[in-house]
Length: 171
Image (cartoon, rainbow, N blue to C red):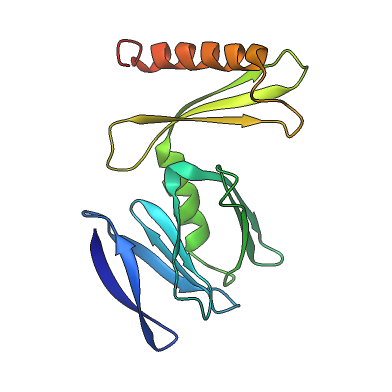
């Protein structure tokens, strides 16, 4: 791990960058939080908090820009990341950059019908700088991901996408 020292509110803080990871843009939102976009992730440091939160581009769930309020809403694909509101400047380059970085990680996506009548989205994503494929499955809140019938449909969709991407021979 390489440490880059950045100034935040006049104090020195550590931004933990991986080897080969580079900063693309930095910005402060209206609450004073520091927002840093790199080649591999988005880093957030709330005003007054010495800790950085990292959200890899391949782990990003949803990005929504409200141009009337200048608010960027982010959700992580993993439940522990939660939901973040960033109050950015009107012409913030961060919005386009985030959309581009997340889209660059997405290899394929399929929407599948589930036995409970709902649908799931199955996505193949690749972390920047990595060879392995990460599978993201987005279920409706009421769908039980532990249900064997749901798991069978999802596994079938993953097999089909692996074949489509030429990954069928890889484990």
